[in-house]
Length: 460
Image 1 (spheres, rainbow, N blue to C red):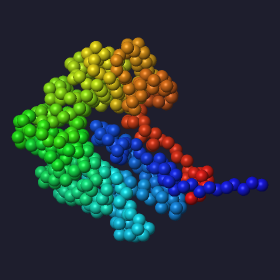
Image 2 (image 1 turned 90 degrees about the vertical axis):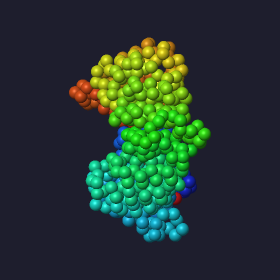
Image 3 (image 1 turned 180 degrees about the vertical axis):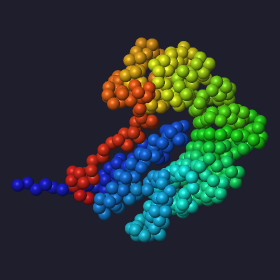
Image 4 (image 1 turned 135 degrees about the vertical axis):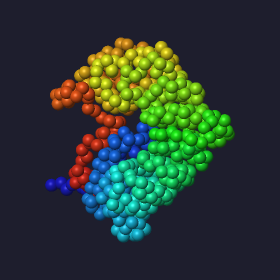
């Protein structure tokens, strides 16, 4: 009779296992920088459910045994998602208790010390939302903050100001700020400007309103800020394009996301007249011809351009008169339920083979667009276009994950799932992933049970 030898797994191996089991791609520094231009509502809609799933995994890890608690506790609140106002009080109490030494091992760092990301999603007024200030004060090392607080009453503005002021507690570590607030209150915007001016390491800033009415980004963040996205660009002071003397300053800004929802063309013209010379990448949402002309005139160093259009039939000849870029990202904001709409995509790509010799990569950045091409309605047309009409083009045609689109379609084949085909025929559209496969993989993967892991690898 043989005796099975149980060999303890080194703590660093368990640490690596925990890292993999709880990892959500493109949500923490530095991975999040790869999706800098996508940060916003659609990005949040995809990554937040994945963060919620990851938190459930972390909670299970720390409940297995005392040893696992010691190893996995630092992952528990690495990314904090507050999308239910009723949880604010309990999260606050937990963080404060650990900060005061209750429940923690003597000499160990409190839970909040390990937090790298905070997401807050609140609609309307919440009973305990003032405790958000206490939550933020327990998180000194935040690198990513996404605040989405909407449908507010005017009397709730004071809470927003308190939250902004509390965010200064993490000013030295904050790298990404997504401030998706609907507030246009002057006092609140003033505090936002004061906060941002103190974020010396800020790399990505997304704001609903242009914080600076004169159109100048503060010098204190110009040396670190690389990506700037704003929904409403309103410049009401000093509206003279150019002549700003910015050439003598250290400026890291290389990427701008222009949202044309409100069509603030005059203000964007002023902004691009000042900063366009530094930009190498521009993302246009609801693309328009005069904005493309503005980019060609103000961005001599642009190398990457991403166009978000209602559908691919918007890619007219005038729209395809592009600057000498090397990378072109394309995605749709609506749906294209007809065969002709998807054919417009490949007609546009054929045009670019003759008109844009500098182009090296065309990427479909929205996985929904890629998923549709693999359905029975579009598959054969897409493969034929890629194999014949575009076979000799000088640029790569990629999917949202950087793979060759033709190889992906040939590997996947068209979707023959009856239920999905029925849905497609009934609705005229295909249901598919909303963003990168990596996050979706994290959401649907079934991890081995924790007990099974322990039985396989032995105790600690």
